[in-house]
Image (tube, rainbow, N blue to C red):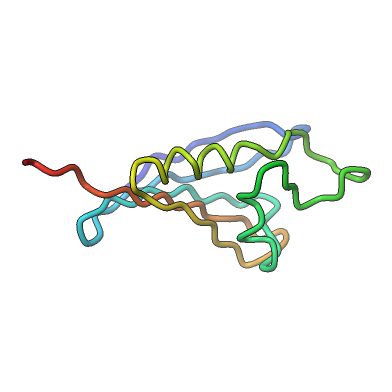
Length: 106
């Protein structure tokens, strides 16, 4: 099905992620799941906004500018696709899914 990917970042936090893909009604969906810090349910749509970060800037434990998911969304949408995140909440990991239309053979 997929290949497990191990990454160490964010001050030594170790996460295991599994990358997967499938065909769904004329599109291909690819997703990455991890068992990281998770995302509170109320933040799932906000995380794609430019410079948005879930943690307050004064107490933030993780680095970054808050532009990676915005860039990802813009690239995916430029190709006619969509991107979204799912998480059961803080401490329960997350799943990021990208859906792109299949190319026309015509």
